[in-house]
Length: 241
Image (tube, rainbow, N blue to C red; front, top):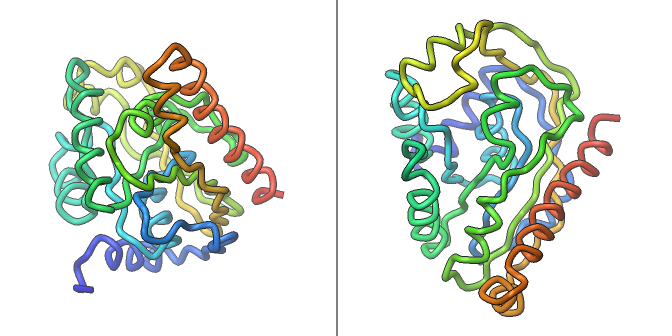
């Protein structure tokens, strides 16, 4: 693997921050399958940590503004292989299309279902916000063989919290995001010691597809979303204590 691949860059950056990482339940990682990685999200380091923990490049869907900010754009798209979501009106459709193509080619796709909020408001390490359901719709709608959703908990054991930059600065790059239209600073969470706990994979079956395209669509989406949120919450409790 080349020295400037997303995986090698992630490992180098985790090492540069002198972060100690502990990995649990790695035997749960599906082999020779399309994998949608779902994780909690508090730090700019989360994508790096997950790639290093899974020993694999992961194509993360990231916030629209990350594709607009100079320097950040080059790092997240050019070096780490993330794909920023489009502006609000095209966001979901573009996410589905890009993710399905990547999953069909057996690339790992990563999603942070809590969205932007935990990134711009300081949260406790064992806290998980409400999950948006877009990833569940993707998994149930995607025409992908052998698709597993892999919930992963990133449990901070020791961290440094500092201020990054004013939130209002980000509204220049993404005026549609109401969270950026407030005073205060974008927090930066730097992990010193972190546990990565890999959850039980949730395989998408023909039965799931049948329910999704029938009258039980809302139920199966809600069940899948709740399963991943509960799995990550339970793993966080294991990891943080």
